[in-house]
Image 1 (tube, rainbow, N blue to C red):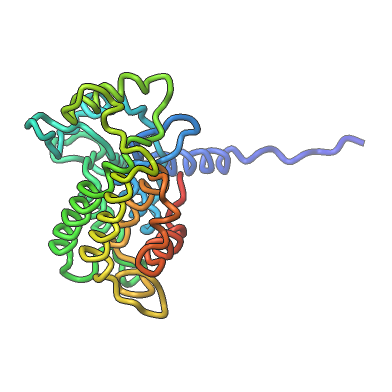
Image 2 (spheres, rainbow, N blue to C red):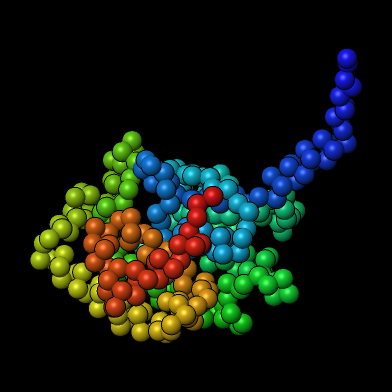
Length: 283
């Protein structure tokens, strides 16, 4: 007996294909700095933005950019520098977010946002919806305060932690030599090895102690200790928590004494890092 099989509904197939295409077109692209293999995020500023993307439930995919290609990638995308090196030259770095669903001021399809703080504001303006129960990255009228806090935290970690962790960045062996030479040049030393503060040395112990003190007086006291959570406001994070979290992610990857840092100030930093894991997925 021949059985008549139902013919595929071409209308449904077309609609399904169109839906998939529309979904793909709505996904944002997040440009992040790739570590050496295995590829994983490690730089603090991209981590701040990644936390914000996950917190706002923004659909996105990551384009990984090798460290030596970061400047060329930013130039190719036409995104101007938002920072300067100490010598006044443009600091062409990441992250960059591309939103394909909008039209830019120059009438080009899609919008590029090239700074972690600006990305957070962009996501806040695009997704914050109290009537839909979506949380806010920035509590009411706090963007200016967040900007000041961001500068404070960046300065604190840069001047106290970076010299202890930067030497141990997870570089790609294939390009590590060129990357180290560039970093040494910008740091004003003749060799990459001159930047090392040997583990276990008295100098390193003193700098670790100074780092702990700086975090205690300059940041730990700002966190209100509440039973409902370790965030700045207790149980619910805001972008300020992600600012600190971005630097903690970098320390986790690069600082040999990470477990020691986790325990400083009553375990505050370890508790904060663990609590932020909910928004640390990599898409």
